[in-house]
Length: 362
Ligand SMILES: NC(=O)c1ccc[n+]([C@@H]2O[C@H](COP(=O)([O-])OP(=O)(O)OC[C@H]3O[C@@H](n4cnc5c(N)ncnc54)[C@H](O)[C@@H]3O)[C@@H](O)[C@H]2O)c1
Ligand SMILES: [Zn+2]
Ligand SMILES: [Zn+2]
Image (cartoon, rainbow, N blue to C red; front, side):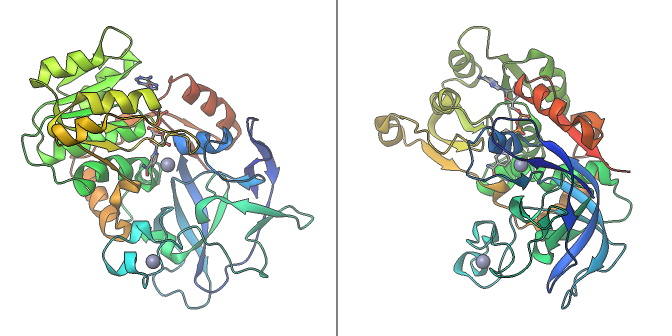
């Protein structure tokens, strides 16, 4: 099958012929229908996340089941599914306490000593990203990385729910307890930020202020539910938020992953408010914050990982939200491309010139 392989950091992905194994126990073989491109894939290419080459990237997929391995009972050939990187074990303290997205076993691949799931035609192992690797015509995944979805859901939109939508919606719906009417700021209007805006709208937030450096994204942010938009390149965005909210917002979602915008996010948060770090700051970087802001103003700072999801429960619900008109997905897709165009898609993402780009397979 054809797949886009990361052979080294800071370089274009290679389009290669890759061998995919038969499904083993508990595994499902999929024909990939579509894969969104998330900024976390670009973080890996730019070595901001510790995933070694060679590796097939891509972690926002939808597909159709082709075959199942021994013991698989939840899926059958022909099922439509979404893949999610937060695979879970079901028995650890995180899984049994209702936070399966924190399961420490989520990136464990096949046991040592078994065949790799992906390899070159001559048999050299190729890494699989997050048990998914969706920049490929087929995928071989643990069944606990997948959820079955309604057949009437178009797969080229369903894929967005696999990462960006679940991350942004879940940050607003699951990670924090946001009361109706709360004032909200979302910094960064990519796939994740636009989904956080929609989560705030679905939750019944009051003001929803979108901040981005690309003002062309504001039409889209407004459609998603933003009541106000601030151009980060035009004046003091912190002062603008403080003006609109009377001193700072109840919830600020940082959806970029840069040290200065995390600091801005904390400054935009009002007394007693919560800053939610959704964007992934490169793992080698630290963020200096004023401890006195936290103590004397009782600001809270929290991370949000993959929308604090229980994806077998959340994703079918998000599909219902789409099909009944409450969740916009079509509008978030700036282009549908073939796998051959994946490197161009990363160029557009680097420049902030795309919303969500989706790879569609034949
Ligand atoms: N927490 C999680 O579990 C999780 C899951 C998925 C993605 N992420 C992270 O979320 C972040 C966003 O992902 P995405 O796919 O939406 O990215 P994206 O590239 O599509 O969007 C980023 C947005 O930020 C804007 N931007 C960039 N620099 C800016 C600046 N200095 N000021 C204002 N706006 C600026 C860009 O114009 C763009 O609209 C990434 O860091 C990604 O790794 C986190
Ligand atoms: Zn992602
Ligand atoms: Zn677990």
